[in-house]
Length: 179
Ligand SMILES: [Zn+2]
Ligand SMILES: [Zn+2]
Image 1 (cartoon, protein in one colour):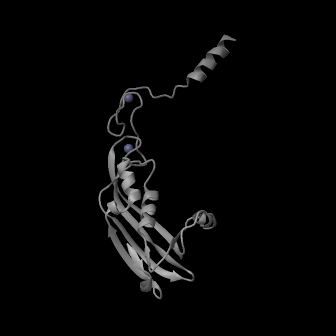
Image 2: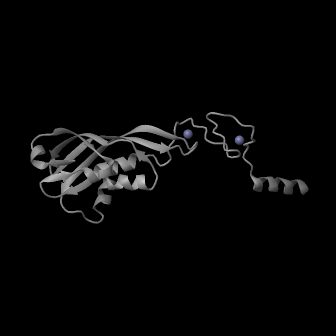
Image 3: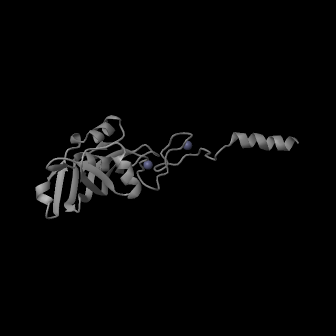
């Protein structure tokens, strides 16, 4: 996932990549920690070109993702897909550099490169990592598990009373009655 600068100096190019998840250390770390499983390679289609004093790379990354629903604990698959725009400026990474740009142009990522080619791998990996849901849901309507008996309420019903019980409030009510 490298772009040679002499290929995009005068013309914007459409590119596509397919890269195994193992190439992205940030994604390998997520798999190792049990956060999710990737079922195939990371695929990116993008355009890269020069724009004044920087290079603009924009496109879409996608990867098949398997996660555990945070409500019903069922494992489910989805195709994760995310659009991105990254500006690459020539230079060396500096402390605080990135924050400055993020404040000014919220959705845009800025990165630096040096030499004759831009390595897209770290930034692409970061885009995928950001797109992975923190609280995955098998569906927006997922009913989750019964907090009393643990039944999956998407597939079964149970007779448990699931009225929220607020002990503090109940005690207060008694106190008022006594007065
Ligand atoms: Zn669910
Ligand atoms: Zn129940």
